[in-house]
Image 1 (cartoon, rainbow, N blue to C red):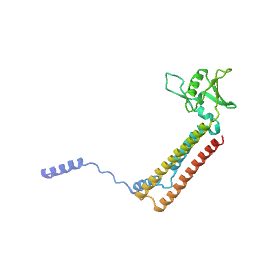
Image 2: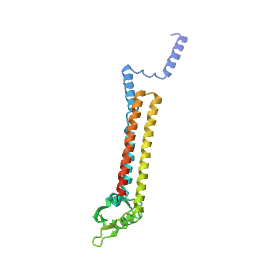
Image 3: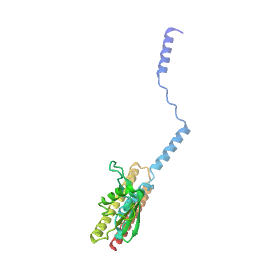
Length: 238
């Protein structure tokens, strides 16, 4: 091979060897599979009738409302679960706490008295301190004369002042629950608005989704009102 031609061929060969390898073009079948997967993913995200998050937010607000109302002395009666959920610090050297219900049994003794049967005698003093130290409970446990592992807790009768405070607290708990429902609605509304701006959903479907959303929110508000009204009625009749 003559010198000039050989030199040109070598330069072309070196230039070709330094060029990055081109990516292999995807086949038709592979492209169709990716498009199908993308459409499925988009459909899952952009479903205007997926109200699971909205419903979960409303249920969370209702659950908190029921829990808040259970802590009130409805009808002058004391809910033992309030005592069972009290946190007890077993050791002064540790900030760790245990649920009272995991350390003892809370049972009605008769009349307006509860008894606390403690599993281990060395837990009696910390449990007594936890009950006495709770300003929300305002209870004074007493050691049982015949059983060192038992505490007797007299439940004071309701007064007009305590009843009025409970009624106010019930109303505030309802307001908090309604705020939670409105927040859940706002999040759903924002999601539907995003679908509208991206034009990923038909306008008719968005209208239907908005109507369905309002029905769910309306039912959540009605459930809150029913729950609060029931609690207040019981308190007022005490």
